[in-house]
Amino acid sequence: MLFRVLAFLLVVSSGLVTGSAVVSQAAVAAPVAMLPAATAEDATTQARAFTEAYNLLLDHYVHPLDTAAMLHSAWDNLATEADGKAAVEPGPSPAFTGDRAGDLQTMRDALSTYLARPDSGPDGFTAAHALIRGMVHFVDENHTYFLDAQQFRDYQSWSRGDNTYVGIGISVTSRDSQPRIVEVYDGTPAQQAGLQSGDFLVRIDDRSVAGMALDQMTGLVRGPPGSSVQIVVRRGDDPQELPFTVVRAEIHLQFVKDKLVQDDIGYVLLRGFPEPSVIDSIEQDIAEFQSKGVHGLVLDLRGNTGGRIDVGARLLGDFLPSGSSIYQEVDRGGRNSTHSTHGNTQFDMPLVVLVDGGTASMGEIFASAVQAHGAATVLGSNTSGSVAAAQVFGLPDGSGLQVTVFEILSSDGKPLNKVGVVPDEVIATEPGAVAAGADDLVLNRAVAILQDQIAASSGA
Image 1 (tube, rainbow, N blue to C red):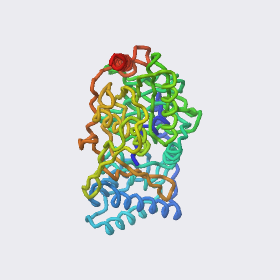
Image 2 (cartoon, rainbow, N blue to C red; image 1 turned 90 degrees about the vertical axis):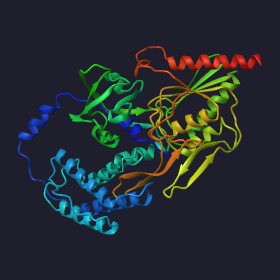
Image 3 (tube, rainbow, N blue to C red; image 1 turned 135 degrees about the vertical axis):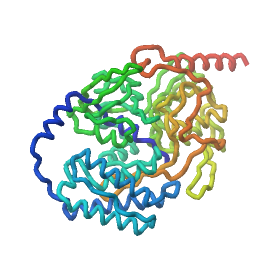
Image 4 (cartoon, rainbow, N blue to C red; image 1 turned 180 degrees about the vertical axis):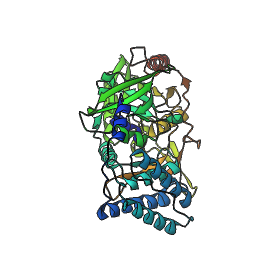
């Protein structure tokens, strides 16, 4: 299965900051009680979680990994996160040799020694999770990341099609190490607070997010309903930093939206491919369009964060002939296999697909496939270039780990990861322009293309 859910999970919880520096200074000045060492039970659970994550990466990640280098990265990250959480300094990295079993035992011993020290487990800090995040940073692949217990529960809900969550209602991308808000959802706390699509994230709760992984950002902004989170952003080319305070609330996100944009042109927005019911909904919408005399369709994948590859393949089967190649998969051994559509094409009508920098993963595979087969015109801006096949595993302490298990190429064998899809027509728009009330230039162009195609078909 293919997942690109962290952007969505960050959608689930994000926010903003003012005045926290004063609070931090006061906290430093106040006396702090010595915290006890981790309990034996907690230390055992952490060791099991780390061991499972270590073995999952070595057994399933699409490329071989250097255990010594990966574990040095893990220890360095433990030191970084310990410093940020006022936990005890772990000291120099243990000596790793590159032997899988030996390096694991060395790290388990070092973790056990660390957890036995006072102040090794302040609130909000789990040493094993810091080590796992360090291994993930070493891997440095967008589809491999750690999920804390809450994120893992959110993922499980998302994969079941439950799109209600506590957060503020934004989606975020971190391409080029510069986190940016891709979309602010209507009627959410983020919109009410004044955050806008295109805003660049600068700090979350007084911590710089430049170069920060999406999973870490998610952890910074997570919190219960009614609590507030602070975010500082920059808007456009203005260097001024804008602070916002957002109160978290329950958000209900619609994966599928439809409307008529002309009497004979339908429009469907799809935010992701979490599970099969979203395709049921789209197929019902299009069938209803056809019953009303619609002859052209706009499929809006802007901000689509991806999801299950089998779900996306089913939707592609609605627009491409059976047996059409849709993507290629490369496994750990370098073996290549081509995956194709099954069933009959249901919807034979002109199609325009809209994409942008927030279109990721399965959204990119879909756009690439219809473009390669000439089944649609692709409009908008270059997609995010975040494409791989990954699998999500539960860890013993209730957290999770998503691991990239296959490389994904386009239907004709071209790379998509870190490249993306170039639209047939690139239409540059200002982020947040539509939300601010400006015309949707990309949608307007899509309607014009479909009108021409429908007219040509009628004339023929």
